[in-house]
Image 1 (cartoon, rainbow, N blue to C red):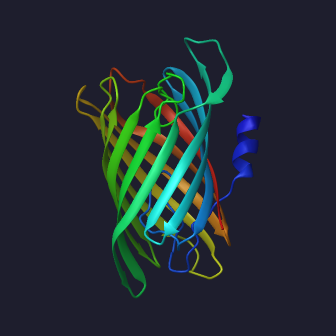
Image 2 (cartoon, rainbow, N blue to C red):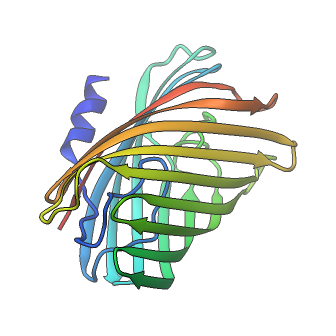
Length: 258
């Protein structure tokens, strides 16, 4: 736990733009991008408790915008686990991920903006097969999705839908995310904002006809080029038998942009 806290404190990021009322969602994604030639360093440590035991994922994410409507990134996760069936208690490298997003639509109006991006996330099986979804499965995965977002000076709404395929197994997934952001301070520049986030994520696995629905309550503070965020995610529905049921996840994140 101490190692995890030290690692996520080292990396900060903020997607900082005077047009934005909120920072990016905590558990979801956002179609609003920064200007060209910007670099974002970020992490979102997840502490996940399941029926199988305890997992901890600590990703270092590096994002770069070669143009104002294109983003590429790479995620390097450090994984820790302590499973019921395994007495080992160790850290190791998880599955490396390659990200690309392209903004293909935007409509800016006074006090609000609506944008859409196409997104792909390719997961390289560099981690162990410990069934830690999003961090370490030891299987190649390919995700394609669309992210849409409406942001005003009073609130923000983000929506993502996509499909994730596995190279083996039966865990192909239709993924859906919906998030609402509520800024508590008036918009200012430089940024000084406290935001509340209300986020939902559902996963339907068509091959095994199983379904999960999660809710996450989060808080985020953005100051200048930095942001700090925390969220707790818990299940609302878990109609599953082949997958391990989750008890909760605690998420702690930091961001920095330059």
